Amino acid sequence: MDSAVGTVVYGLRTPIFKEGDCLIEWVPRIVTEFYRKQNVSPRDKDIVAITESVVARTQGNYVSLDDVAEDIRRAFPEKGIGVLFPIMSRNRFSSTLKAIARANKEVIIQLSYPADEVGNHLISEDQLDEAGVNPWTDVLSEDEFRRHFGISRHIFSDVDYVRHYREVVESEGAECTIVFSNRPETILEYTKNILYCDVHDRKRTKRALIKAEANTVLGLEDLMTTPSEEHGYNPEYGLLGSNLSSDEEMKLFPRGSQELVETIQKKLKEMTGKTIEVMVYGDGAFKDPLGKIWELADPVVAPGYTSGLEGGPNEIKLKYLADNRFGDLEGEELSEALTQMIRDKDKELIDEDLRLGTTPRRYYDLLGSLCDLTSGSGDKGTPFVYIQGYFGNFAD
Image (cartoon, rainbow, N blue to C red; front, side, top):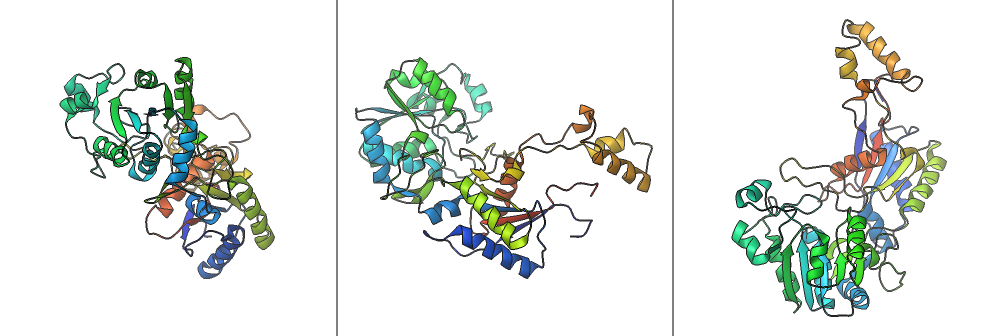
């Protein structure tokens, strides 16, 4: 790679993988073909990333809505189930809600507002101000919500999720009540049997429900966790990270990702002689400036990653150095001073001002976001991503 080039990211096109395909064999094969066709030489600290959907697909990690409904029926035998804090997504939650309604004929949905936890907005903060509604204290019925805010449509999909979720429940012949509140305890006024459905705040939600003496308190991570030869399962995440596959089927988050990446790393080492890092990635973790969607609907960005991707960047701000400490230098003299400062950054205590504006996040989260943006979620056909030069810097 030319010294003028920093990080280079390649989206690798692959066949359409099916259940039973062996990624331990396929990944080295596709990477070898990539090296040959693109005239790329492997190096230590290169990164191979595999999207979670390919891992789950090759595992056959799917469940039918009837499978999910049966699991819910066992967990909630009494009539009446509270569905607490679901995210607003047809792809991510509509199928789960349909299975819930198939299992229990009285469904109470409590939505957080003005947005769900990943940033899908029912209404804007400006609308709250205009209506004089306090989302931290005010509990709204569906009728009250409509009187204040009318029809609420998602900024990108144009879906009215209040109406959509009601229709999903009623299509299964179940009764549906929808309430709006940001306090988990509100749902207990309707039923003591709660399925909390938030992703990242779920542990806090569970604590609040248990403290408030709910009868049955389970989360999405507690469903479809038992090994079965008849359908998919995930012992760690359950239904977290699942999404729509067909009208009657859902794909689960992959299992065994850590073992997979470590095995592939060994294969690549045997093939190239280089230590190449490997990860499985799902949703990235970044916020859309218009829709305010955080994006991360999966429980984690990377369910599996090799040890070289642990930790986070130890960087200093070149712009700050160039404008301040080395403001009187130019050209080659400035380049040499910056290079020496970078090389010495691990040897001495660096002034925290020199780190201002750098990104204090974990490598595998940063890389997962980079990979998600590269591969996309549509028809790019690049479920593998190859990255070179990520750990380099100006001093190289």
